Length: 220
Image 1 (tube, rainbow, N blue to C red):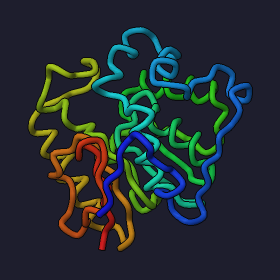
Image 2 (image 1 turned 120 degrees about the horizontal axis):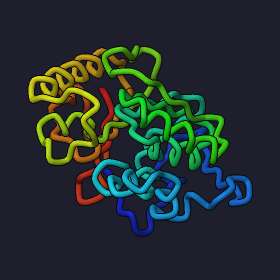
Image 3 (image 1 turned 120 degrees about the vertical axis):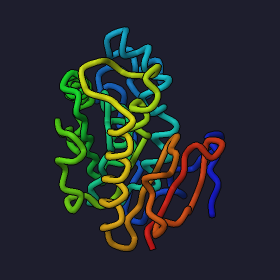
Image 4 (image 1 turned 180 degrees about the vertical axis):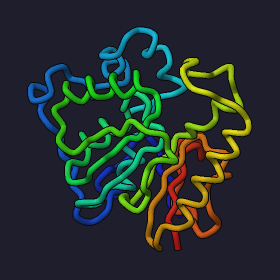
């Protein structure tokens, strides 16, 4: 098992054969959004900037996670993509992989689409839907930043536009477990701050990072 650290991390060593690290010039992106988290988050309204430390994936974490998932032509799904930060960062770092975010809050989808316009990334798309409405067969690999957790920790709820409950946490967790279990061998999964209840036993831990809060799995 590999252990990655943010300091000195080499994305070339972590991504899959065929994927490339493409660093676009700042002028090609308008504002230099990917310089640091503060620069990236400033494109969102202040309320959503304040949510970033608990709800949006840090750029350095996104780089490591996307490096593990990136594969030329692969379709990666971010389960609960929020304002789109992971997908946009991942799409910027790995231009030969397609990143999709599914999000059930319409306002967050709107903000994600607005941010996408700033980046002009062709390999990023967002889906306005509940996770149970997504066909997992259409995707190769997955990223999960425990988007179900607010159902059992209401103090960190993003807003009050959707129903939350412990019952929904259990339902979504079981649903994701079943969907992942049906994927073929070789499917990759990255979890961040996960309780690991959604991970089938067929997925084996391949690497960890960020004090083991970021975990990388491969289905056998």
